[in-house]
Image (spheres, protein in one colour):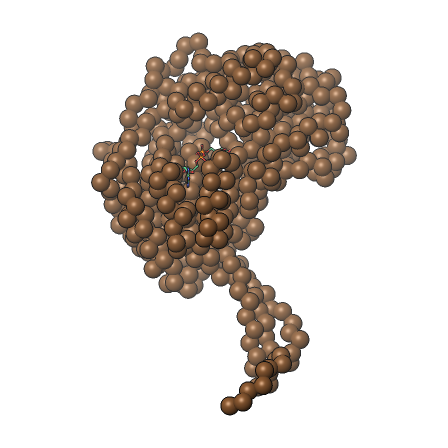
Length: 494
Ligand code: NAD
């Protein structure tokens, strides 16, 4: 893989191709142009979908173990090129290199993990009401998948969609976010080098409103699997309704992070910090609302602010950096506006609140770790996903009330609880209305788990056995070998 020219190509029908139009990708650390990528023309999107359709029959009927072999080659190539891939992620997305290396490892892991399902996609045989009849339920590929991903994990999310689709026997056309397309295009080179049969995986680039919309509204798409924001998820779902295309939507979150007085406070502070500031706060399962039991509130806040003050904000290529820039100027401005409105709603800024005093680089999208106090549960900062390094910390007096406040959200993806009281753990498991609960630990989620959000956080989910299910359909087969009708037949005059 060479990135010398830093011009990248899409993967359509097994060939690496450019487009008539190109767009520039900016490096969030410097604001400078990092790469040039194609803007897929409508006929190229059509060609990718047609190639996926042509390839699906052979790919879907190949022995799963043969599909797994290709996937293992992809995993090996991702591991071989992990450092280069991690550097691409840093250059286009801005997360610190140590986090980007973790993302590259995850990108390989998805292929290894889903390759294991080669001998595990099973059906069912059901007892029939009629002698001589067999009834079975087979699990068959969905067909052609249109996949749409966001910018916060531009590498790992490619694998999260492509790997389960491949083992299921589906073919796929994937579009990355327009701000971070290079990671996906680097994966396109790996798919080609790994010998993925032509048309099985296609990567097209362009904006959501053009290429994304076309992909999700075309005939010949059997499943839309999208990860991104709630507003975009709703648009995609509305558009999909016209063709009755099934959707799997992994959307935003507003995770509550509840700290009880009996917990290991040191662990809780470090976890709350990591869960808020990793990837500059740009993670769907991030701690977005911290609630601390009143008896330990002051101590928690003091320790949290002290620890936040030690975080090193700067060049994400350095291993010593804890927080890189926000992905884009637009995201930076969005977060700044949230903090301004929180201030005018009455929040007190304990630290940060805007750009750091000294910008690590002149053109970067810098935002300092920001801690807010005197926040009330009904303020905007507590209701909408901020997706940046900003944390409101609220005291609470009553466990039942805090569970209710935590649940009172349109989002329902992840929730955290720190306590050593087993009764409280079991109460929270029963009563916290979220798809994912973390007790005394932070994310990330595990590949064998099920990453699923309730309410506005999505429909369907990813990872593990249940995530794979979205990429498969069920087919029921009745076979009568008795020589007699299995059910009453109409009279036949002939
Ligand atoms: P976004 O919704 O702006 O964009 C997501 C993708 O949708 C992009 O590729 C974009 O080009 C595309 N798109 C935009 N309009 C479209 C349209 N009309 N038709 C088809 N595609 C369209 O989201 P983002 O800002 O890239 O990502 C951040 C969001 O993603 C946050 O809300 C975050 O919580 C969420 N997220 C969720 C998960 C999860 O697993 N639940 C994981 C990561 C990120």
